[in-house]
Each structure stands twice: as structure tokens, then as C-alpha cells.
Length: 75
Figure (cartoon, rainbow, N blue to C red):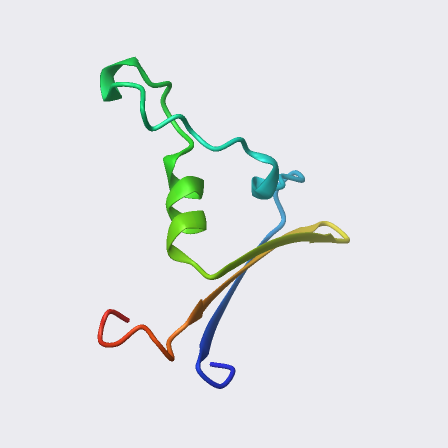
């Protein structure tokens, strides 16, 4: 916690992958016609207040933030 903000940081040592560069899925296409994958990143972008990627040495680091001040009991 940082004040009223929840901060989650995920680190891995996989090959470089910047999820912020992934295109938004076209959610207007019928589900059966959509390609598999990509909705996880989309959901994080929609639900979180902040989403940041950085590469440090051999590590991918993704940071998500969610402001709880106006979130009520949803958190």
C-alpha cells in the first residue's frame, strides 16, 4: 500500500515482453470469431488505474496500481 493506492509488482526472468505494446482486442467481434489470447492484458488495463512495464537487466517488471480511495467496498 502507498497511501490509498494498492501497488502490485510482478517480476520474472523470461524473455523481454512489453505487454503495453499489445494491441487492444476488438471486443465487437463475436466471441467465436476472435483469436485466442489477449484478454488478460485487456482486463488488467480496464480494471487497474495504472499499468507500467520496464526491463531491468534480465528481468521483466510489471507494476499495477489501483486507487482505493473512491473504490468503496469493491476492493
